[in-house]
Length: 314
Image (cartoon, rainbow, N blue to C red):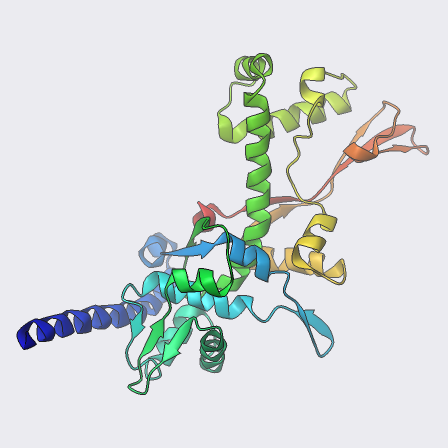
């Protein structure tokens, strides 16, 4: 019996040593990534993120000095990163490894300990006198936050990145993808319309939305209405008002700041000023169309277009 116990102990110790080595090597690989794009695949880690949790916490904002900020999403990002890369869920002597761990997470050592303290208060990690740090299971996380959905997104994370920014982009990206799927389902439910799209557009499921939107814009500019292309709104991008509500912002300036931040971090690119002019007269608030008396033309204005990095969300 003692022999079996010793074998299990050695096996557990081996797992923990391997996990510690993984964290230490991750940052070394990130140095390679920063100096050579050819080796970028070597240090990309797949991080499992629970969509419902992220959607809920992005709007959890509290007044701190002058601004309302989100203080929970960063520790949660650290939890997701560690949980996805440490298979045993145990980090031995975590304090001694704090430098490597903080570099892996792209935060300072002081911030790392702050995150651990917050996660411990949420019962997502537990510290032991021996110096071990134990990460709680996903089941425990679901229980803590009372999650209903187990829907997850796998994101590719490069050590040193700001993972919390990727999490902030996730609700926007998921909503856009959800609307693309809804458009496809609506088309798929109408056989005559689908047959027409299949024969005329000749595109796969993923490109239906873009192809239809291009046709709608073409019809608007040239004033050639077509019932097959006007019965739904093919633009799936989110307006500032939607993002404002999604994140619980207090000012629309925060929406603009979020967009700039995500662009600067190379998480997405944003196409702005999507405006199209037609000589046709008319006004349709639902389709965001306005008649310009000065030039006797109608303006169609679409929201900024997000294009998310394939290397992160692909």
